[in-house]
Image (tube, rainbow, N blue to C red):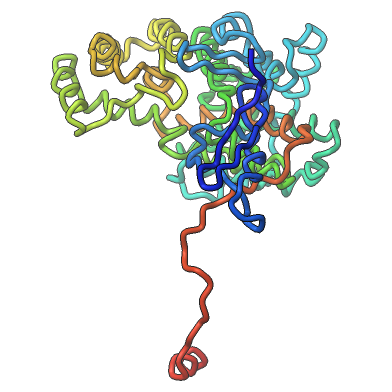
Length: 434
């Protein structure tokens, strides 16, 4: 077997360079030695959107897109969703192992007792327009939290980091529920520490005049599983934003506000909304063949199919499809589900989509479930953010503890004008100073 290196020959100079290979990767800095003249900057790699560039070493989440595998700390997502609840999953993602009974009791107690938000935060939320998008409220309120918890700036202190993690995982659902209630013109509901993480969120959303809100067990479990499925997903856009902003040593509230802002985009957290629009546009199973023709002609997109990473069936989509039946037993069957199932069947048997490896992703079924549970479309990315909060925090903490990481600053390929003298006529100079 040969050496674990890559030999590059620069045809401009005829010089050969031997680059070490580690973890099937070369260090981009080693390319800098490749240059024509000694005073050159050296060779760079160009990779818009990070299509084939690793920005970090991570032990949190692993995806094999060709095989449809998703692992949290080495555990298959199917096993995690079946055997753990969301708070156990959050502990696993952040700390690396499934908590013991004692660890879980302490973990859940701390998170549960940080679900309250300052009364001034409620006033802050009340300052938004009644029709403000809940995601905009969430992003803004997360950033505002940094002014309430100034100890969060002590990012190198392990106990301070732990406290901020408790606070954020605890408070994100409270802020999300307040944003929903604000949009509905309803009074805010205080957290109920006797309920589960998902059950308490449902309580803060939907409690009306009843003395005690009792969540439906099937809906409570379904929401908990959806939080688990969204908890982390490698170096996606929002996780990268969390790491990038956090690399400047901003506090975790500002960093998470940036991550949530990235999630706000329709190409990231808003994709399941686009699936719903597509299914409504199709309208009937009879209209699917004509819609498929339009997709092949490039007139419309097949939303909820395909993924930057997955070139196989998204394992999260399989799990969501399974729990959808449990939800619909409670809520009644969403008519869009029949269209979705038939659309999936036809697409998976069509050579056009098979050749392009277009399979259903997590967004294909999640929006249908959210709609059946009574969530308005504007809340979909907010629900995504609640589950993803633990993943963002895990990525943030791992980045801080990685000694190889520095403040993020990508290179660029400058294609602008060369250095030139600025010539300004006397008339123009006089016009500026008038």
